[in-house]
Image (cartoon, rainbow, N blue to C red):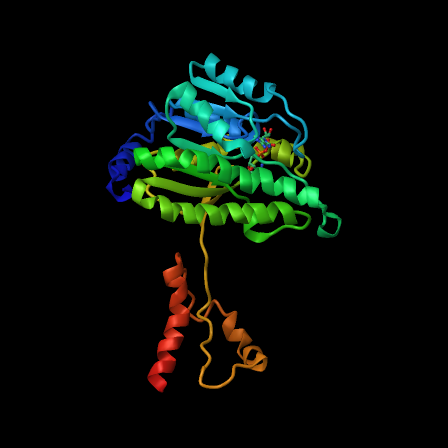
Length: 328
Ligand code: NAD
């Protein structure tokens, strides 16, 4: 159970030693990590960091184009070589994340176990919604949402059996807020966040910790929309330490989402207005809603809350129900 982990001691140890310029107090020795889409960009940075801190890493990458066409084994091979040259342990896997079982089997065959999963692989097929084709929609859902599901589904029984697992899933600010021209991608990324929140609940009793990141980094995915100096400033190396911390046994939190980039890390949560409770002993009309609209959307009257689960979500409705019962 995650409440039983010795994370407080580990955090204190890390704090006490945080002057250590090598940054190797939080170790991953004996742990096996799968990083999907690790042949470049953010995934490569995660694989390099985790392996440098003792983890054995499966470097998964299909090696296709940014839009998801083709495949090339060199993408994963180059990163595996880089890790081995630095004295780390790594193997390549060239399957699409849509074939999650094969990705996980590579970890089992090479290292005998799996402890850490970073779902990171992704593609982009941006189009305004009017021009979006079914192919643009389906490919993006398949790689991001179904790919995250498939690899996680294959790793999950191992995590349950050993009562230990650490997962980081990759959403995006676009999944949280939407973005012009990215209906397919934003829907998939919001789906990944919802999946993570449910897995965090289901994983709790077996010490499976699931968190989500919304990263920003200069990679080939963003090279077309960012000026070159920004690509340079937003190095994946400024995202990787958060991912590493989230997959360490010292991580105290589950079911959280973090925005991260250029060395800045922040936690995002839902806020709900206090709302307005209408009487239910007479018909509720659209005009009633219109009349109270300002109160419904008011976050600044001191009644706003931050619900974190469906029980807390139900509270607003339930309180109105009780008020109405008392009146009768
Ligand atoms: P990237 O294109 O550099 O890396 C993605 C990698 O995934 C590539 O190496 C690619 O070959 C691989 N891949 C694609 N489809 C695959 C499949 N079916 N199976 C296995 N591997 C596959 O992009 P990146 O910027 O490093 O993005 C990494 C993740 O972060 C993605 O999920 C992306 O949506 C997300 N993200 C990135 C940013 C950013 O600013 N770079 C912002 C928000 C979210």
